[in-house]
Image (cartoon, rainbow, N blue to C red; front, side, top):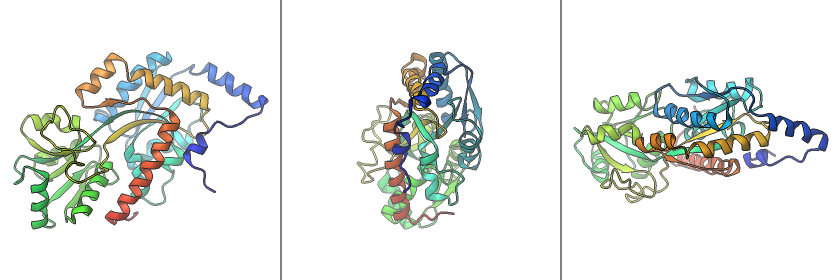
Length: 326
């Protein structure tokens, strides 16, 4: 029977002969620089969130944390490196977002299983997502956009930060609910390219993090139609939540740290403790506040449970939207 991620993370009952070396290893950890492998381009909000947190973690752990950007293949280049090629010793950390958990929905024959093979250390941050349209769009609300899309099937484009992104799943869920025919156009390398396409009106809809589109909206270049989560944002008091608009279950984005399977639990707990301290440091809190990101403090087991729950939810959304693995 295939084990769940929580079962993999449960403390293993070891003999005294095995426990002593693990204890010694954990006590000595860390004794050299740690590498954080980030499967996103440098300079994106995702990259900057991880750099902010890892910098604070390095101070707590008293060793450097080197950020190594390895974008490509929907994250698989970075994750395969950590999961298959580097030791399970805690000196290599894999960065991820919840888009990682959507990969099995879109892609078959993956070289790794994101839920099974990326053992969670912590979710360090999260942010709601906002649906945006260019100012030239002939609608001002979500209701008006839906009415326009129904009257003009196949004539609107919905940009996303990649075919396997959470924003893409949210878009599919909305289209499925309202029976809309909108063309989805994925842009690789984060939402930067997609946002440029939105400003040029090459796409008429985009789901972006608060930080990525706040500047454009406040500058009067985009319209905010709806936001994920269960509360309106102080910076966007007039923008309703998607739940208010009749779209429950729309999730935002989170940023997580993971390690290779087999990493000693004591080392995972040490990294988790460093992450919890890091997100409360003044410089990290200041960066998060400027970019519409909320700090998160989690345990590895709580994250494992969330991975499983969200992974199942993505499968259900994909089934309803008719998404097929390719």
